[in-house]
Length: 254
Length: 189
Ligand SMILES: [Fe+2]
Image (cartoon, rainbow over all chains, first blue to last red; front, side):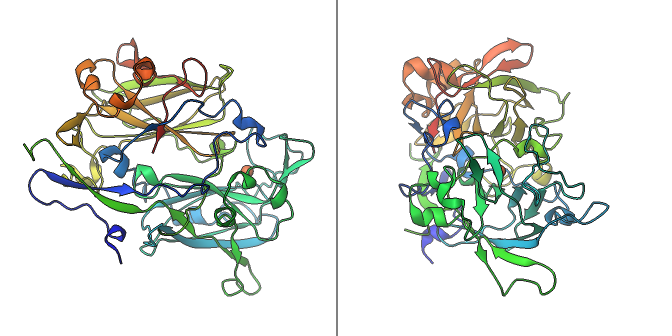
């Protein structure tokens, strides 16, 4: 283990603060904010140069949202209604870790998705596919000490959208993660292996680096598939990791 | 070095389905002594409201502390019951949002500098493939703002986009312009 993989905030001499710095993503790892094939980026991306924000106290801390917001039930999207939802039951599980390979424990993972027919339960949703009275499509979980999470849900459907003629989103599950620091916040989407819509989707293809793009595709797991009950997909999520740097406060060094 | 990160993708239009929680805009409960309300609108490059945005805020307590183990100054006095500092609110049909909070304290920045009171803000919406990050600073802190090491890196003519505007008693306005002549300063985190 290198030093950057430890949790690194230690008090040394009085007045001396050591704060972590979070490594920058590699070029091509994240999508550009201006991506013309995804039309809605046009009026919604910053056009002026970004200003560097060093990682100080506000950036190396972050909301530790936890048990007061969720129950165990929140990780099972197939229960809590009068009946069972339509569609293929699936287990979606994985590990949240940082780019140094260290698991991220006790962090909130939120998901939202369509039902089996490709329909979101939302007032602005107009896709003429049926709602499922037994499926809301939202879930929450907290990672365990090994950074692991597990949801039980339904295979989401594809849905049309207005970006271009005959545009359809590949089936996906939206994920939101906080990590342990403001710098680690991530909103992403999980896709399914072999989806024929993937090569056609501007949102998936907005990520320049092909290897990074493939990070968003879950892996089918026969080992974790439960006989007679549910298919399983593994989706590991990697957040920014730390490097060490030293800050001193006013009381030191004068 | 290290693993590739999981790439960012847009939050899409449907986050607000069920995920925002009722107390999201209330970093502190309404009526908390000293509470301030920050209102604003999220606007696109045509000046139109963004009705499917999500605003999140993160900040120190009025004492300049965080209820977080990575604050190296040690545990906060009230432990688990301390000020949590997180706000989350979806934008309305007119792009509007509202956060009720306490004004944060100043923070040691290192090298003897002090960061002026500020709130970190993440902006998400359909059409944004990654979040945009900005900061809210306070209009009643001209000296602290002038000495702030982050504001020192911002071109003078754009500073105004980062400083909330008084809008009434304990009320501030902070509009977020994604583009245009008043484009908000966004940060490379
Ligand atoms: Fe979606």
